[in-house]
Length: 442
Image 1 (cartoon, rainbow, N blue to C red):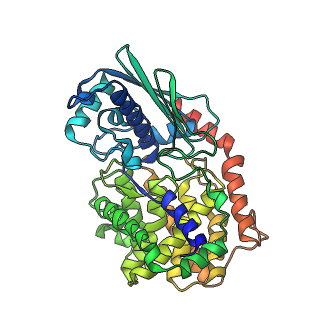
Image 2: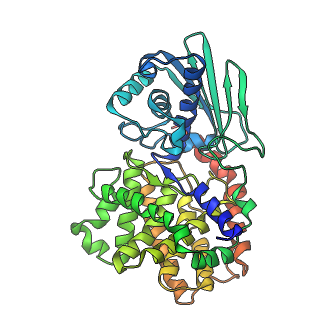
């Protein structure tokens, strides 16, 4: 393995990881769990079950985008939605060492206790005064004696500050190394290009990337659970139903749409299975992988072919996301399905130019789909994105590509990607504010 290959794999491992539950409320649970652990350590609370029995108050302050994405999404195993129950679960049973799987030890007793805390109004959630798109500050008070806090910024598992009784214990703002992250390098610091991503995915040793197949293990399990039909809007289940064959048919497009949407159905409705996330989002991880996995299942590919296609899909999404930031007004499905379109081109024998064509076709098609929060309705956006992903891939393989005369498309693929990033991160800022205002005032 070359030094550059190791660097790119480092980026993949940082941005592609298992996550249990929607990552915005999970970030809240993680911050609360860390604050609780500080109180345990500093106050020598060693008795069994202390966190289940103690009385404490939890105050959570979040950025607007965290609030938007946490208001309507199901929290695993609870039958409830929102940041309040996520925070309470983080206090009762969360373990910060699990990262985005902070609620891994969830059980009926901890769910019941968390619901009690919410019912007792022991948890408050408010907007933070911050310029960060992704920001969580969780403060936990044990009686009138002690208080601990933890702050997450910019990445869902990036704990940048911890305090006890107003004394700063750790602070990792800026470029310093922080708990739970390898370093503070941003995606753009890796200086990727689509050309390098394609070459890397095509040539890196299979043994060095075999780990990416865990995406198939986790996300396919979610899809199969969602197909049972008991989650959310049952989008995937409805597409797959025999009764709807007259509308949807039995072709690969409907197969890919049903599998991908079913995984989103399950995840958004609070399924207790973990997803393999991409760029801090489980839904993006599902959308970036499941169409590619569906192709492999339907038409048969080797594990090596699938791994290389998944690698390409993941990396293209990570690369584009670098220009947008973790949270924005642009729906993440746009980016994720652009990645999956590239993976589909690759599995169909496509070359670099055709991968670029797929990206341009996607950007020229569904740019502008807004994010109005994480919720069960996301499965419909996922299904629509999968349709566009396959359409763009098929056209690209036929040598059809949106031209530079059209809209925001440029001849240079990197300029085209930067244009998308500017629209999502800068151009749609007022849209983001309006969406949040509408949501909180309903």
